[in-house]
Every structure is written in structure tokens, then in C-alpha cells.
Amino acid sequence: MKPTNRATRRRTDPIAGDDVLAGLRAPRKYLPCKLLYDARGAELFEQICTLDEYYPYRSELALLGEHLPAIAQAVGPAARVIEPGSGAGQKTRMLLSALDRPATYIPIDVSAEQLAATARDLHAEFAGLEVIPIAADYTAQLALPPPRHAGRSLVFFPGSTIGNFEPTDARQFLARFAALAGPDASIVLGADANADAEELLRAYDDAQGVTAAFDLNVLAHLNRAYAATFDLAAFMHRAVWDAARSRIEMHLVSRRRQIVHVAGEPIHLERGEPIVTEHCYKHSPDVLAALLDEAGWRVRQVFADPRGRMRLWLGER
Ligand code: AVI
Image (cartoon, rainbow, N blue to C red; front, side, top):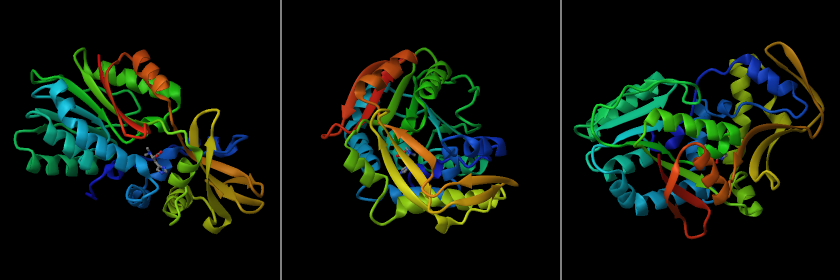
């Protein structure tokens, strides 16, 4: 699979059956959002990125197009780019093209197959670039090989994926990568700060139903990988804006009272009961600046789209 955007970098590692069941046993049912990204889910996410309603992808692309020269200037030559996710999407290529002779590219992903394809493609496209794939879960502890060149390290985490973490986990993730990247490192982080409920509801429940298909695909994934018995027609997708927490949620709502089996365990659902499948925090700039600061990153520059929704954060250790 070698399409051109971040969807190809979704995580496809197996998720412990216990994590799945823990969520379905909870008073407010939820599923690990990683489940969204099996092969079909990754394809559907790619389609989401092309939708008019899903502005974060387009906005960030425009921001990168406009501000990468300034970012490249700040980072300097011979950079060592570290990307949680297997990269090789359009945004990675834009970054590597903008940087002054990047020395090393380190994609980190659970899919060894995806990493091998990334390494092969980037070798062919960027002469002299050393690609060091790391097959690992980037949300867990990991080690990186020491830098072999004099340039700065740059952590690249676009896509507003930071919003999919709980704030405590987001802080830990940013702090871990600050430590991994080393004392002279920079970070480019993409994040969405939109709090316009109507716009968000459209972005996460589009008119063509692509996001609904993406959400419902989780149940097909569970049927296949966790011996579950979900009838997809018995659920509907809903997007919910939680203003108090400043996050958009995807719900699968049970259309009827039903019992579903997952890994042999009966799960009772009431009519209208939701299963939360994903949330994306839309942190205000103040909250995001504090997260970066607490994780050991000093904000050097912030580039916002004209409507102040998406931002690229350039931070330094
Ligand atoms: C991957 N992530 C940043 C996307 C988001 O906006 O939370 C996933 C997504 N879910 C629904 N639409 C897109």
C-alpha cells in the first residue's frame, strides 16, 4: 500500500483482546481508536482527507506549503528527521524536499512491511538520504540509534493526531520524543484548535457518509479479528461535540436493544446506547502551548491558517 497521505501511516498492530473487552464492559462503552485503522479503515481515512468538510488535512497542507521554507531555515542543514508513523506521505515528502540536504529519516511504525516500502520509496526519491526504519509502537517506550551527522534532529508529527491522545498521554508522548530527539532538537507539530461545533460536526459526519463508513468499519474489524458478532446495520454513526472537554467524538449508536458477542463474551447494548470509537481534542493555542512547554519544548514560531483553526507549531528543546 503506497498512497500519498498520512492515512497510510495508521497503526495496524494487533490490539489486546483485553483492551477491547475492557472498553465494552465500561459504563460508557468505548473502543481503542487504533481499531479504526485496518487496511479498509486506512483507505477510508484517505478518502476522508479528500472531503470538502474535512478541512484539517487541506489546511495543514496549505500551511506546510507556505511555511516550510521558514521551518527549514530554522532547522538548518543535514537534519535527522524523526517521524512517529511510517511516513512517505505527501507531507513527509514536502518536508524532506524543503529541508537543506536532510541526512537521516527515521520513520517509526508497527508495520515492518509499511516501513520497508517507505524506506525503498524515499531512497529512490531523495539521493543521499539515510532511512532508518524503526519497527515499534511509537506510543510505547523505544530507543533510537544515536545521530551520525552534525545536523539538528527534527520530530515531525503533523495531521492533528495529537488530538487523538488523552491530554496526559499527549504530554507524555511529547516529553518522550523530546528526550529521544536530544538536546538540540526541534519539533513540527500540527494541531487543530477549531471550536465551531457545526463545522466540526460536518467534518466528522460528512454528507457522503465516508466518515460513517470509516466508523462502522471498526465493527467489521472486530468481527474479523476478535470473533465478534456485530451486525453493522444495527448501528449508526454519530459525531458529538463535547464543548466542556473541547473534543469531537465519534459514536456508534445501537439502533436497538441487542446482545453482541465479542471473543465469546456477551455485550449488552440498549437502544440508543453509544460506543465511543474515537475522540479528537481541539486544544486552544494556550492549552497546546502549555502541553509543549510541560513536555520540554519551547515554542519558537506558530503558523496559523487564516481562520485560526489549524496551526503548525515549531518548537525547540
Ligand atoms: C487521524 N486523526 C487525526 C483524525 C481526526 O481528525 O481525529 C481521524 C479522523 N476521524 C474522523 N475523521 C478523521
